[in-house]
Image (cartoon, rainbow, N blue to C red):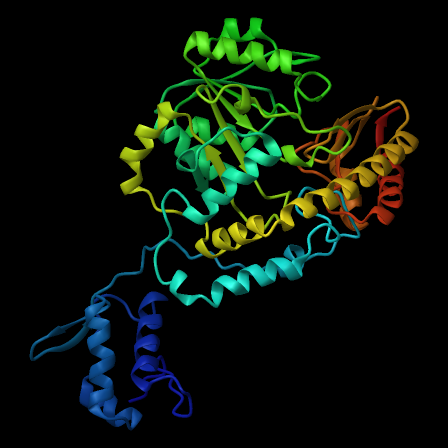
Length: 458
C-alpha cells in the first residue's frame, strides 16, 4: 500500500521521524486525513517506507502528544483533530519586499536622519565595547533603566536642557509611547487631558487606551491660553514648548510660568514632550518647562532624531509625587529598552561625543532648513508655511485643492516620499531630516510640478 501523503528524503539532514511527523500533520491540517480516519500501523508503515519501527513510533508519539492523533489500544492510531471547519489561513501571495526596501530618491518623510550627522563608527565602538563585556549581557535589565545610563542622563539633561532631576527620578523606556503607557498606569484611568490638536497623535492613542477624555486647548501666538485651561479644567496638560501657538514658535518664559501656576493651583500635571529640544539651531535653546517647576512637570526626552531613529530609547523625569506609585509598580515592570543599547548610550554620553555630535547636527540642520524654506517659497508662492524647527519639517498649505490620491500615485512613481502625518487635498509636509541637502531643491521642484498638474481648482 502506498502512503503518498508521507514524503521523506533519506538524504536530508532533517531527522526521518520529523519528516513523517510533518507529512502526517500537514495531511490532517489540509483535510486529506479527516477526524476518525485510521492511520497505517507502525509495522505497515515501517515496511512500506523501509524504516525502523523506532522511527515510526517517534513520529506517532509526537503527533499523539500534540493531539493530532490518538492511540486506541488493540485498534491502532486514528486522526483526533478536526480541521474541517477551521478558518482558512490567509496566504500572502504578494511580495512586499520590494516596497519595504524601496529606495526613494527624494525622501521628505520623518523616517530617517542625515547620515552626515552621526558618526556610526563611534556608535559601533560603544556597542562593541558592551558586547565584549559578556557579564553585562547575561542578566535582565533594570526595570527603571540601567543605573549607568540614568546617571549619564542626569548630567546630560541638566547640562543641555537644564532638567532639574535626581538620577532616582529618571525612568527609561523604549520610545516616547512606551514611557507614556507607563506614566498613565501610574496616574490612573479616566483622567482628562488637554493637548494641542494634531500635535502628537500617538499620545492620543495611549490616552484613549486608559479611558482619558481628550480635549484640545486653544492657542494664541505665545502658546496654550490660560483661559482655555480654565474652560477645560484638565488633570494633565501635554505640551511641546518648542513648537507651540498658532505659528509653531518656542513658548516664551512668561507663558510657561503662567501655565505652571495654573497647574499648581489646580493640582494638574504638565507633561512636557521636549522632542528634539536640544536641536534648536536658529536660536539658542531655552530651559525646559521642568526647570521652572519639578513638582508639577513630567519631562520626556528621546534620542530618535538626536542620535539614531533605530535607537528606541526615551526617558522621563517623574516628580516626587509620582515616585511612590512607581516604586509600588516597579516589581511588576519589565524593561523593554535594550540593555545593550542603554549601556552603549551611557558610554556615548559619558565620552563627551554627544556634545560635538549636537553641535554638528545643529550646523547641518540649520543649513538644510534654510534651503528647504528657500525652495518652498520659490516653488509654492502664495502658500501658507509652518516651520517646525525641532521636528525639522515645513508644512505647506496650498491656496487651492488638488486630487491628492492622484498626486500620491505620481509621487510614488517618481520615487518621492512626503510626510504621512500631514496629508489633505491642500496640506503637504516636507521633513528635511534625512534627505541630502543637494537634493532638496530638485525634490521640491518635482513635487511642485506634480501638484500643479493635478490641481482640482485653480
